[in-house]
Every structure is written in C-alpha cells, then in structure tokens.
Length: 183
Image (cartoon, rainbow, N blue to C red; front, side, top):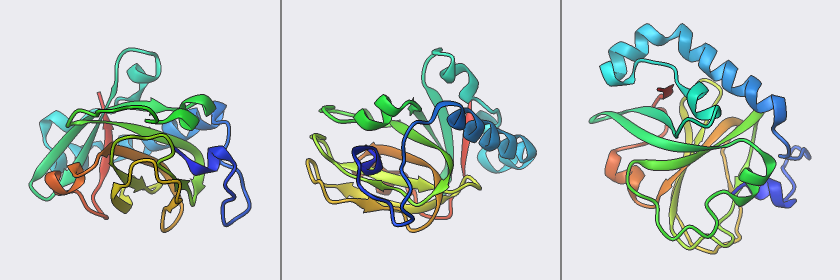
C-alpha cells in the first residue's frame, strides 16, 4: 500500500492520489516505450515475453503479465493492477497469502518518489520500485508485516510491484533489470 495514499507527506510536498486518466497516460507511456523496444524485448526476454499487454487487464480480462529480464532468464509474473485511489489505498492489506509468480502493480501518473508501508498487511512483501524507463530502480526485500514505517523509493518511479517476501531473491531480481508489460 502506498503510504502517500494515507496522507504521509512526500519529500517534494506532493500527494500520491487519484490516478484517473493519469494512470491511463502512464500505462500508455510505458506501453509506448515498450512498443519502441519490442524487438529488443523479444530477443532479450524470450519468445514468451515479446508482446505488450496491460490493455486486456485494464478492461477486466484477467491479470496483467509482466516479464523481468532476470539473471537466470525471463521471469513472468501475473499481476493485479492498482489504478484507482481505492485500490492503491487497499493494496494487499488483509491478504494472508500471495502465490509465487503473482503480485500487484501500483501505477502513478508521473514519475515521483514514493513511500509504501505494511499497515494491516499480514504477509511479508518484496517491493520493486520501477522507473519511467521500465527498470527496477530500488528493491526492498521482506518488508515486515504490519509495520507502518515508510519504505521509500530511492528516486522517481512510475510503478511499484509488490510480490511475496523472498520471491525477489528466489527469482534473482535486482535493481537495473528491465520490466516489460506483456499479454
């Protein structure tokens, strides 16, 4: 969950609220960047990771699929999209389990430094802060359940991906790796 959505001040004084059409612009921008790099993505991430894909998920047709260019090869993740204020505020609060290979991605309308917290979240989470270029900018592993301490991105990001605690290490994920949206 985004601490900004509960009123925690960001260092730049802004508020992380209401995505509305801004979320659509951010996703379009990311998909546009990915579209320009589809040839690279197809070669670098493998055949199963070569198509843009948030559109179907945004229309309620199942989870989105992300692919991360990890050291041992492409990693596919089925993710829920948190793109309304209510979804971002709720995040993964109350969830007692999160299956391997799944997660939730939070979308911001413009790059910004963000903070997340673990309020009312009973499971440990890994948080991947993703920059406007689609690369993991910061990785926070095993955020403590129920901890209200803000966890900040190191710099401006457009997306935050939450996966089950320990999954980032198990999958070989680290800063600098490319994340691509897929079908």
